[in-house]
Image (cartoon, one colour):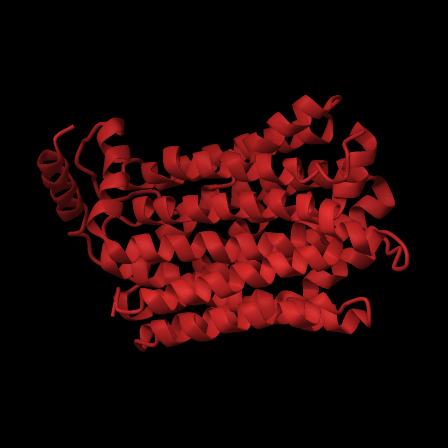
Length: 409
């Protein structure tokens, strides 16, 4: 496909969509977006505190059970490229509702899976459909007034963070009382309820979009990476920070469920609540980005991310050090994540679904790599090896940001 023609098509497409007026994002709508995003992203993270039970049920080796999370993230990556860009082409209301209904069906299949093969395939499907989160985040940024875009993205992202954190606690609690399968069946019911709410509150009419082919739409995602250095830099940062995030969370259930801790799923899930500061910090981060402090937030966040692994490494002394490390790590990662999205949304206002889709592919790849690498590292070198891996990723991200500091100033 001719590159110049692709550029002309992309500019024409963005210019035609960009003419609509901004009415702002009502607070109630933002709250509903946040709740819907939290529930959707929770489906991706339910497996983390359940890995030991899933491994036992399907006779999967503990060192390899991270493949469950990896399959979900692979599906998520595929959805980011093939589904999320459709938000710039089709009616978002129909797109969101369709994804949510199919997500509920995939969750039911997980809850009833008779084999490991079906379990892995249905987790991949859940990941593929959970990208409705990014459709809603881009939608929120599109509805928000320019001077409040960072705050709007932060508010909706707060729901995402709470979903990630509460997923572990809720999954552990339900699993202790009714088994791990019930977690997915309960989520399927809640997803259908949220689908009905979204069907009622999402705008029923959107500005007409100029026709374009699906192939050209996907090609324009790749073109954005060619034309936008800021997107490339922020995408790499996304890969690194979420690799670090999953290096902690994917194997954490393994040492905590084993002696000398021998914690229940409910108790393990409670550690996710230590990261609630990340959810609170996301909104503040958006406000700072609106004031032009995006690079400062990024540097401080990455430094905090690297430092968080020091207390985590000594959790055998006291679990309060683990709580402190989780607090630091989640706050740091979510601050950088909100900053990343706010900055790239401002760069290409009329290609937000494609921007967030392309950006989040790197998030998903980082999550998948972090999950499988950390469980393999834990099997070979124990918790010390996991912490060394996490610290190395944090330092790499900080150095990369420093080297690319001039991009996006």
